[in-house]
Image 1 (spheres, rainbow, N blue to C red):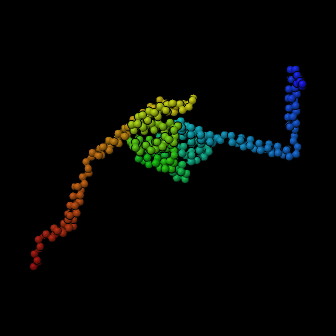
Image 2 (image 1 turned 135 degrees about the vertical axis):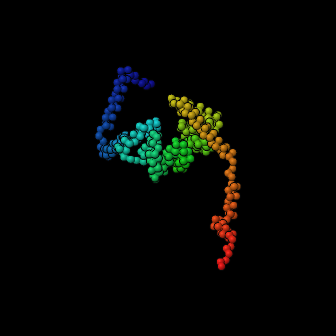
Length: 312
């Protein structure tokens, strides 16, 4: 019968240590400089690794121009329009003019009450060949006209922008809101429903949908939507709307309700207005057609004069 040798704890420790030493020796042998084709292969791999490292470093370098552009965009999203306008000028002095910066400056001009310079800038951008730029310029003109309560012109510009960019949820929402401010709820239905499905997480779009439902009398749908918007979309996330959003919505609803009432009253007044009297004009025309002209009247008068006696 074979018996396995028994090792004391000290012997087992020595055995483990010996194994570790052997592993280190093997690693040392592997670390020696390779010979033959292996050396060329390792050098090639090292060069490729160095090239990839340099490429990664270039990709991770910060672009100051794009960083500055992003800063201006964030200012506008935070409604810091005056600061954004100042930075557009500083940006162009440093990096030169560009279409994107001109659009940002036009938006800043519009939102700081400088309507004429903003309109001139937007109209100049309509000459660009890029359809996205044209759409943004038309949208800017539409928002400018809507702010001036020139709703027919605003809708025309926003419709043109929609044709150029039919999947822009913010644009569709602006078009629907303009229709509502003009008292045209039926015209607002399609663009706001499209916008809501295109951007379900866009608070501004969803609030405009709630506004449309409230103005249209769909109280249950509006209530369900607002309840959903007040719930955090994820853990540790803020809800899409707050009390300030609801106060703004209430003011907008009052404005839209008044616009719908004004349009209804105007339509009713027009229907009750007496028809335009066309008959007297027609009779007058007939009389004039049969009445003798001035020249004919003079001829008739001359014909009725007594014939002078022949001269003797």
